[in-house]
Length: 198
Picture 1 (cartoon, rainbow, N blue to C red):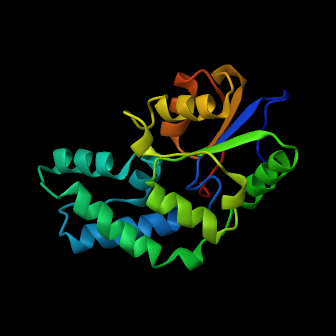
Picture 2 (cartoon, helix red, strand yellow):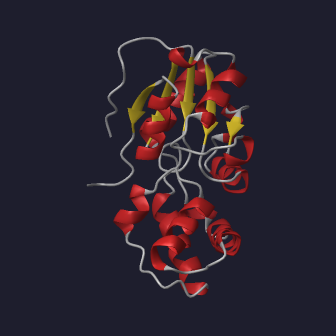
């Protein structure tokens, strides 16, 4: 994988977790599918729909599907089962090599780096731990830290604030359109990380 990096220095770097730092998207899709089946969801959620929703918080996704299909599946129950299923399969995860290499280089140079993920900390933290990435990141932002998740800019703005860097001096690494939209809304440059072979 070759990433198209801007030809300038930045003061802060923000990484999404799933599909960007950690090659976890196929596992997440399997966890979603298992949870939907367990809860008798009346929809067949395709892989394309899953990737299109990358970066959107779980409960928001379930809410939208409920609305679309006239269903009343409990978003918290779906999330809890998905988390349990995903957590039992963490050993399958590996880092996204191209992004890991960049993060390690920035960390070694003493650059300010952080994680801003649409997943809960209960997913992000063990994912980073099992892939050996956790020690690089003192700042981890999740939906619990902000009022609005991606595509709103809140998560990236909070990450910039905690790094002590102005938004316009931050570079975001993202695999989801919601994350790219959030970076744009925050006034930040971004790098798209393809999380699947299209």
